[in-house]
Length: 84
Image (cartoon, rainbow, N blue to C red):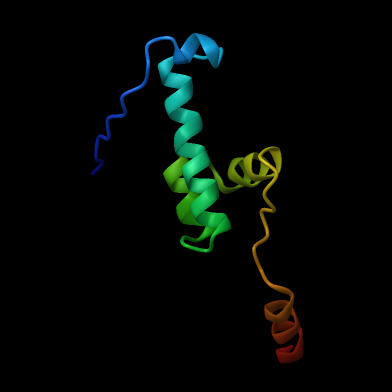
């Protein structure tokens, strides 16, 4: 099941952004997923699902947007290594 969300934009916004409504919507969806992932609100898998990308594609998109695809804190890594 999916939900439709509408967003009103000025008519000239797409020409200023050099895009069309479909590409803009795709980029907005990706940006929202990346931001929620970056803030730790959702997992990488869920973010990829929201962005309608594979996890590999999502990781590449994170890098393109300047966000690390690895959101593990150094303390968490140290704990993991200590358990092994």
